Image (cartoon, rainbow, N blue to C red; front, side, top):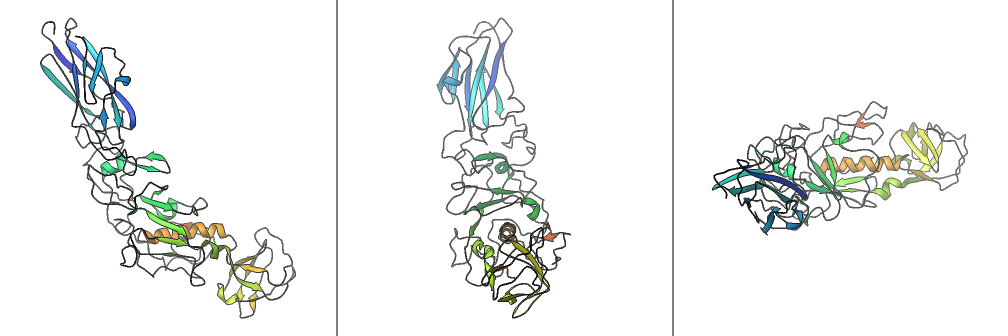
Length: 419
């Protein structure tokens, strides 16, 4: 040191949030301008979160480090991942720190002139380990007060404020979630979710995770450390093919029953059944016929729509012999002749039904009950996704939300959805 001096250290840039392998710079300066000193840097109280996000990565070491190749100041020499110093006495020195975790936190300390100055990484004036720059950074790290959807009034989704800030990998990309909204994580094992249906049907943000983004117990926050309040799990839904009983399009299952292991399916959508047929024409029909002879017609709703080959058809009644009050060639299709044995489809738009059934069973998996009081007409005025029939126009209804503490709220055997 040449003469008396004082030391200062620049604050962490206000907009900086840690990520895996992003960097941030700090500059130490001695004053007056004529003073020079060797400056030492140290990373202190660095976090050691497992992995680099709540469901990603394997690292167990400190989440902040110095690397020589990151340094832009030729005078700075890295001694260890947590210490560095200038090779000579300097007026100012810039140190570059690398983050290795999306929730990394700690402090950087500069020492010179017989003094030590410390600033937080990231900028965190309330000391909750969350960057002040994050829109939801104010509040306790352990807060779990999500209030949307309000449901039965229970707050929270089992993820703390810090965990929602640190974030998750969803389909290979990192996200930070909103601690004011109850998040639902979904593993669509067979990729059956279709169409544009989504959070608007269930009222909560949905995150479709990929293979490897949960553990063997379905947890999506298994790489936890700071401010962990609960194990939260993804809902697992798969293609069940054909059900054991006719007329069941989807089912949900309890995962806490003794006979169901924790990794058991939370929901099934019977895709083959939905795409299939419940009856065949008993005789050939022409394009003008207003009665469709079909054994098994009573398996269908008392009135509704169906499809034979490419023709869509509406009907007003069913008997033991077939469909009555038939209107041919609806929804822009043309009436046509069909041979004996032609299949009468279960649904006119199976892709739409598959998508709706997916979200219906997902609703059960997070505690939504069947909305038995909802409108049962398909008149375009809106339909609760938890009600029947599965028609176009489903919208958020009055469903009953449980506590969202995991996805094991559904009761075994209660949620078979039948025609």
